[in-house]
Amino acid sequence: MNDDGGFFNLSQARVSIIGLGLMGASLALDLRGHCAEIIGVSRSPETMDYALEHHIVDRTTDFEQALDCDLLVLAAPIRTIIKQLQQISASSSALQTSSSTVVVDMGSTKVSQPGLTPSADIRCAGRKWPGSGMLKRVCITTRPSF
Image 1 (cartoon, rainbow, N blue to C red):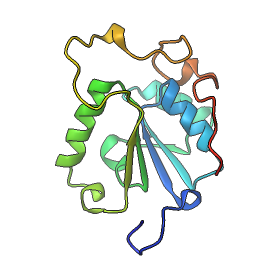
Image 2: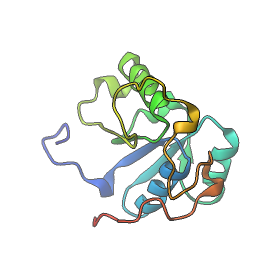
Image 3: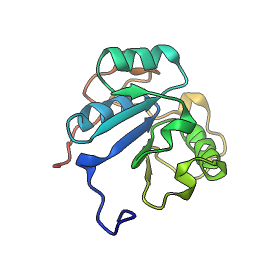
């Protein structure tokens, strides 16, 4: 439910996706036309430029500004997601005070994994490359009905 007592309405939602690699960018493409705005964040300026040029997102911004949204998607490696959740809980942004922001992640675990190395990152459809440049619509194979 949102602040006015109604249910979450994706068609009117501002969606922020933190991480514009294969999974985050694939989700952004699948959300295109189903939400009011798609906001993207990446640690790489080149990835953000690519996402804008290829109409993957409507606009890009920094992490803190992206927290002011209706749906926040964390689409990064597990260790990064854990750090992002810590940043969010310490943030003075609107997210901290908004009870209507929905936060989801695309990580496979929710706790720190001993021995997790960068080479143990999840492979999506047999690919393991950072950034949206390697985007192919192979990652999300079942599309939700909106």
